[in-house]
Image 1: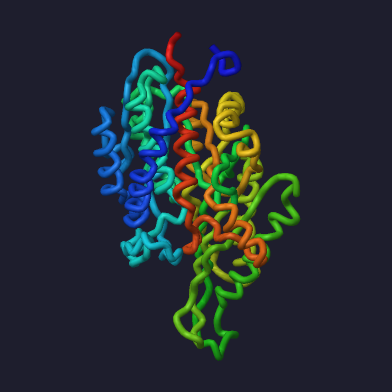
Image 2: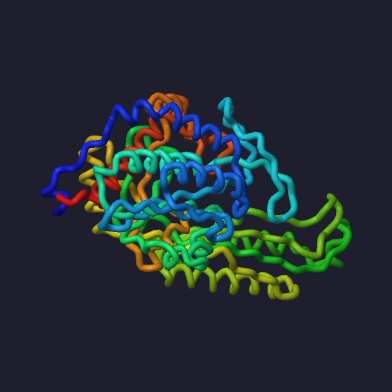
Length: 421
C-alpha cells in the first residue's frame, strides 16, 4: 500500500523523550573521542557492542574499520541506514564542556588535533538511537534493517572500501539507502531535502612545481618556483571564469602552498594542493585537463622542468533518487510540520555516500538543522556568519538536533518497511 493511502504508524513520543538524555550522553562521549579516517577502531567497537545488545547481527572490520549490523524482522524490504565514523584533523575551539582534546598522528606522520568538526558524532548517535527504537518496537515495521558504520568519509575512501569488501553481497542487499548529514546553517527542528543532485564531484590534485634553487639576493641565477606557482594559482581561476559555462557549477581551490625554509632562500620546488568541485562528468574532465595544461604551461613560461601532477581521492557527485525523496518527504512533513521540511539547494561539498548510488541502490541523503533559532538570530544581529562545518568553532545544539534526526530516521524506516496488514 502506498504512503498516500495507508496510515503512518505513529512514533512513541514518550519513549523518545525518556531515552533522549542517554542519547545525548552517547553523543558527548563520541564527540570527546574522535578518531581519524581508517583509524576508527574504538568508535566502531563501541557502536557494535551497543548494536549487539539490541539483537543485531554485527560484523566488524568491513572496509578496514567499518561495520555492518543486520536485524531481520520478517519478510519485507531491506533498508540501509548509514552513518560515517571518522573525525577530522582539526583542533577544537568550540568551548563546549565535552570538547575533544584528542591528539593523533595523521597519514603524514604529523601530530594533529582531532575533532568531529563535521558532526559525524550526531550521525552515529541518530543511527544508534533509531536502532534502539526499532528493535524494541518491532510490531511497527516489517523487513530487514541494515546499518552501515562507514569509515573514512572525510577522505572519500570508506564507502568504496566497504563495497570492495563485499558489504553489498555478504549481507542483505539494500532496496534503499538513507543517510543524514548535519547542516551548519539550518535551524534545529528542520530537515532539508533535495530530489536529484545534492553534493558535488570532488577531486584532489597535488602539483609539485619545479624550479632551480638559490640565494634570494641573486634571483637571476634561479628559476623561482614560488613565482611560477603564483602565476599558476591565478591562471587556474580562468578555468572557472573564462573556460566554464557560468551555469555549470565548478570550483578550484588551492588549499595549500608550501616552499622554502628561510627568508633569503629560493627553494627548488613548491608544493600545491588543490580541491576541485564539479557536478557533470564533462565539466570535471575539462577542469582536470585544464589544470594539467596550465601547470605545464607555467613551467614552459618560466623555463622550468615539467611539474609532477597527481590526481587522487575522487568522490563522485551525490544524486538523490527523486522517487525515494518524494516518497519520504510527505512522511517528514506529517511528522515535523510542513514548514520544517525545507527544499535546500545543492552544494559543492562532497560525500562518498554517492558510491552506494553508483552501485545501483536508490539513495537519499537529508540535511538536519543544528543551530538554535536564538543563536542564528544572535549571529545575524552581529553581522557574523555561523561557524561552518570543518571549522574548529562549529558545534551543533545536541538535544534538538538529535531529536529531529532520530525521529526522521525512525519515520523513514516506518514508511519504507510497513507491517503487513
